[in-house]
Image (cartoon, rainbow, N blue to C red):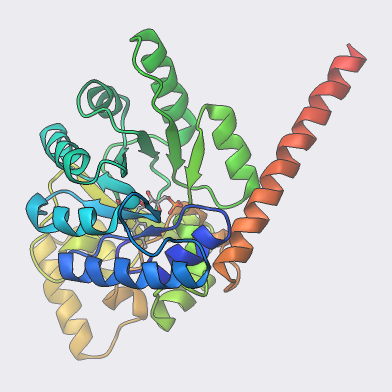
Length: 333
Ligand SMILES: Cc1cc2nc3c(=O)[nH]c(=O)nc-3n(C[C@H](O)[C@H](O)[C@H](O)COP(=O)(O)O)c2cc1C
């Protein structure tokens, strides 16, 4: 989660038994700073060795591939050896280029690629062969794939397509709408080997979220109604730099509503600027509050470690309960 998940959140998640991720920084110097700080914090937790060589730093770091020059980031990655580099939003050729360079310069680092369709998953499995595929469904918060499906159909279809195509057994990680142990149990049942949770951690104490952003998240509910996928959110302050194939899920705001009401993007932007002059705005009109459909399940601010342990415990309990239900119904047969 670019801008929200820094070293503090990532270290807290890793310290609790998850795999923390530092969101995309957009700048190699900032990534260097975050990873250096993470190393210091991990050492305090006795979770990292003194030097990076021969050891990975037990966390991941995200790279938004579109528009990002490989060379500027690769030296930072090889300096710190993060356990995972998570690539997202790129073409097959770009993923191939990044994967090749990372494997050359930081061979201990595992590569995850985030994708949003069966076709793109097949292309990646045949092409760059990542160590894991993050399958991002349409419920996910933040930037995503404009045309997509929820993980409920996406993951089983990818599993079936891999099996039918005799493709390597690449672990699938489910992303989008997973908020608690019930979601984890469901994702595992669908065929995932693990889960990514973004929106749930917007309620983590360690997330770098401005107080108005956090308040809006805590107040939002009924995510299918309060949130929307749109390209409007990237066009608020100027032309949208994202390729047409991407949009983002965000708290609905006046820019989104103006476009829905029929204004062109330019007209909607002009109206927003006029409203700003009159102070006639709420926080979601001036900042993009990216979050997923699960936003209504973020009820309070908690420590990241508590979120990780609650989710793991609840997932185990859900799976056990389901097992017991199945056994009972088998006994009745
Ligand atoms: C605030 C926020 C920022 C995000 N930033 C990024 C990003 O920088 N790069 C990326 O690949 N995905 C980003 N995502 C999407 C996540 O990688 C992930 O797919 C998503 O959070 C999973 O769905 P969930 O939010 O329902 O848990 C972001 C999500 C959120 C909520």
